[in-house]
Image 1 (tube, helix red, strand yellow):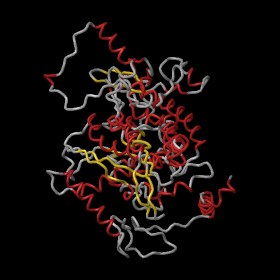
Image 2: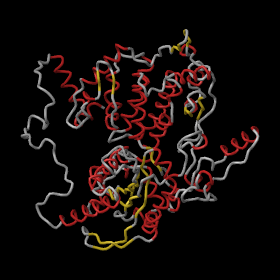
Image 3: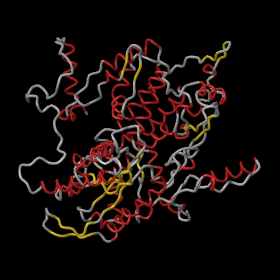
Image 4: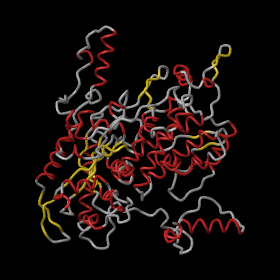
Length: 584
């Protein structure tokens, strides 16, 4: 492990592509601004993650425990996000979420990080056989969006729900759906773009504005200087100070003043600003691609299939009439019933059957996806609940193929562009120059979605992808900044809970026992490591020709024509790394 901590120092990319956080602008900023940190290759650059979890196997309980995890980015890409490289630093006990009081629990960890930054600690390097002063720096936080609001101290719902845009969040209140939506993406288009002048396609207005500048960390730090945190248990409802009664005009003026104030969206001054370098970091709180992708996929699937969770209902159609757009989709009263005209983004009954049949017939590698046959029903056509990773595969690979030839071309093209954006964003190797082009293309994609889908669809989860490509340019590949490895790690803590009255204590004891066993095994030869992944197919004989795996069903013999064989051969050649120079 001591040798692996030096890996990033001599393995930065040379072709300009992004493979590791060491290739990021944030890492380069650390090297330029604090050269004494970069001078010692063994100094640690860390990421922190936390989220609420149910420590019990029973899902009908509401206990909420928050593990606080640290990950070390010095190691190789293959080792970086493995469970062995994740450190459990804190366990915030339940049964309820800590809320703003999470800063009280994080205070000891922040004190340690400040000591590691300012003075460091003398440690022994077993590889170089010498003592040295170890320092550490926290790059960013990784969490889902509600937990992001808890850590950053900003509101994540309402008029200023976007943690990046702040008070310039393009929000709009829907009267009948009774919620805020976040549209207005035409402001981000280049001047003179044709979408800016298409009034009938959007909200019957010509867009002449421009996107506002995003606040820097230093500006947020200055704004929060005078903010006074009020931690502790809130007062009982009957003891809360009531707001004085105001006239309607006075109340409107007061609300407008509060919303124009930079402090209006702040719930607290985050404890992370106590770190001397935190205000200078480009990316402080990462938007989790895992949860954004899952929520976007779930919303798209629901509105296509017109399920019970669809955001295209009676209230959504009334909002269209209230805004004064798309008159052909307004509700119609026929006798005693209200009729919703069919929309271009609805799948017909026949198309639903074809769509579900295509998904149910998919066969992927072992562990690639859940058994989708048990989730998708063809008769009647229905798609059950899917997990985050299933939505990830669905958006990136299956949905564009399953929709081929179905749906109207406009909504289908917009969905395909959305899926392509997530697919390119989540690649292991990314070209930073292409990310700039992706930002512009995705703004057009969001405008196309606004053209066809109802405003009620565009909750905060449809707004956040706008910022993902910029975060990728600053923080590099998504797989180092999403919640998948941390969610998997939290699952390994559940088996430690044997005493349901003290779940956090059980997890702490189990974690320490595992660390002790792993330390002792380093002195033993020919031993199996703790938590070593076991091959699911190790009982199958290894064949040099046939790939290891277990067949899903009885094989079917197929004879390829010369044309099909040439297509398959060409496909294999075009996807080989050795052919890249000839392709270019």
